[in-house]
Length: 251
Image (tube, rainbow, N blue to C red):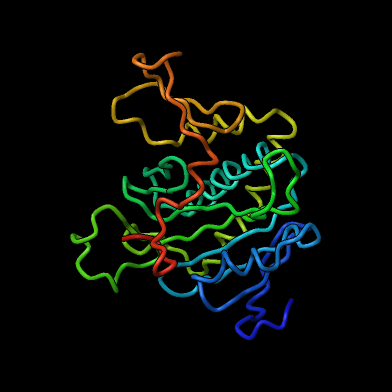
């Protein structure tokens, strides 16, 4: 804990060993606060703000490989987030991803993830820390008529019957541990496949895959080599789902 004026204990979360949590009062500051706290010693710290229209949480990670490879932890975070949300979703509708960072439900965006690392860390150096953070759209009541924002949806609109949003954080921590264990025991390819399985299809119907570097490859016979590459590093520079002026999801 720190002496940040807006920080509070909240109710204790049921987290796996090595995780701890810090509750703050504004979802828009979760990512920045996690980055402020981030260090190798803070690994496993989860910062969260779960009340209001945009529940958010972030976890500090301690990578063990150079940034170019460690950045693939973002995909582990997305897989864990998808499973945590899906575990409490109404039946017969799937959680999906839009490359690289948006999470969709019932074909509409319901949130997204992002990744941060030390700004001065070169690609071939091991970063002192990573921060994976995410934000969900809990309610769109303040946005007016849902017909005005058809590209997005909310936990409320979709009938997520979750009395305590802490279950998303608790589930995320457990699924994240499992994702990293899968990566360690069976290789990154298995984790990449899990992410790819939930990726919305390319509009052209072209084959897509995640390569060992974490980049998205899309089949394109018109290109030399037959594949278009969308780099993970480039894709994470600017979150596709975030409105910078508000720090909230774009509606």
